[in-house]
Length: 351
Image 1 (cartoon, rainbow, N blue to C red):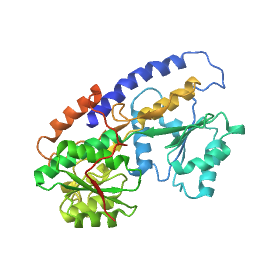
Image 2 (image 1 turned 90 degrees about the vertical axis):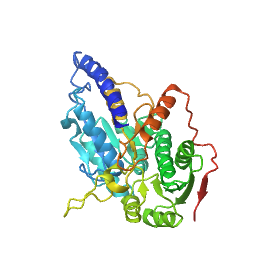
Image 3 (image 1 turned 30 degrees about the vertical axis):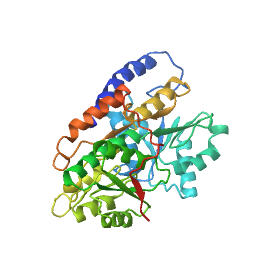
Image 4 (image 1 turned 90 degrees about the horizontal axis):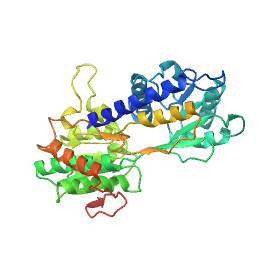
């Protein structure tokens, strides 16, 4: 599945090379923004080396963007502020002051929690700065939200889990959800049922992944999934000798014991639904360089904004890749419709 995303990125990169090249051949004034003088500020809740959470997704996209070869170098991202807690208004304010004082043309705010403070400073003297904010809505001025539709990736994750349940002759799947809107749970449950009509999904709404996982294991669930990233999901599955396909858990699938070098959770890992913000960041940069109003910053599986990690061939059920290939082809052709707002009958809430 990862290869699907890479192909899209490479095709787009070729287009962007020509687009940015044409910009740089124009005789521009000293104040014009080009790919050679754009200043990009990035506000992270973690560090540049963080591989998990929204910081991890942002840095993965930035690193991929730098490797695509269309002229935006790492020096354009030298205005990064790290370890900014979205819940600390003073820290967010200080970070915004820093990137504004660096005269950034584009500020990428990687957490929705930064939005309130950005709204306070986005107008006036800063109206020429484009603020690019994760999971926010456009304000009609200079704040632009970027969003990814995870429904299809979660549907395919459900298929993987459903097929594993068939192989284990146990239909019980578990889902840990932080959001109670139910859309990702529904998408997962629909995918599971498509692969295994007998599949049932027990869901726990909780930010405490360890406690939620324990409840689901006691319910007899043989696969754990989630709509947020937490190592506790991987650990609980590995300790219970069951399986997991938690949100963003590809990092934990490769985790090793620092002393022994042994894989910690690989024997329990099936797959992971993931974000890829690279194309959205490319679109944002191009909008700044071209001095144009950006198109909506959103997309899902077909656009390559979300994807499924490579399957763990050692743990997934036989025939899973072939079933996924067929389902993805149906999604691309429009034959497969995933309505994550629809009511599903195989989900039970566990208190």
